Image 1 (cartoon, one colour):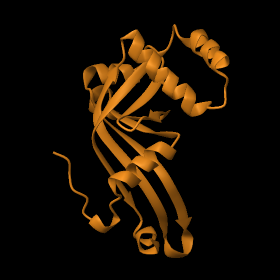
Image 2 (cartoon, rainbow, N blue to C red; image 1 turned 90 degrees about the vertical axis):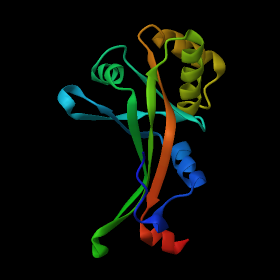
Image 3 (tube, one colour; image 1 turned 45 degrees about the horizontal axis):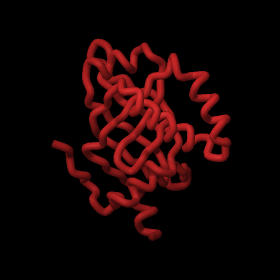
Image 4 (cartoon, one colour; image 1 turned 120 degrees about the vertical axis):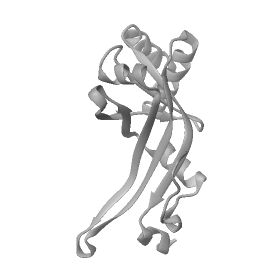
Length: 162
C-alpha cells in the first residue's frame, strides 16, 4: 500500500524517524480538502511514540476534511540547510501516514491536551497548566492520528558523513 523509498541508502531508521517526530515542534498536516484539492496546513503537535496529537478550533476546513476522509499524512522537516555552492539542500524529514479522528471522549481529550501542554510548556507548574486548560477547554477540539506508516529520508551528504 505504501511505496518503498527509491533511494534506500537515504532511508532513516525507524528510531531516527521517531527521533525527528520527538524533536519537532510543528509540521504540515495534509488532508483531502474541498473539491478534491489537497489541503495542507502547518500545525503544532505532540508525538507520544505511537500517535500524533493536534489541537484546533471546533469548526473549519480541517475538521470538514477529516469528517469526509480520515486518511491523512503529516510531514516534519528536521533539517534544511541550503548549500548554494552545490545547488542543493542537506535535508532530513519524516512523513507519517495514518488515520486521524476527532476525540470526543472527555478522558481522551484531557490526556491529549495534557501531552500537548507538557510538550510546549514543560516548566509550567501544574496549577498554571490546569488554569490554562480550563480557560480554553470549551472551544477546544483535539485530534489523534494513529500512525500506519512512518518513513524518513535525509540528504545523501548527511548519510555519507555518518
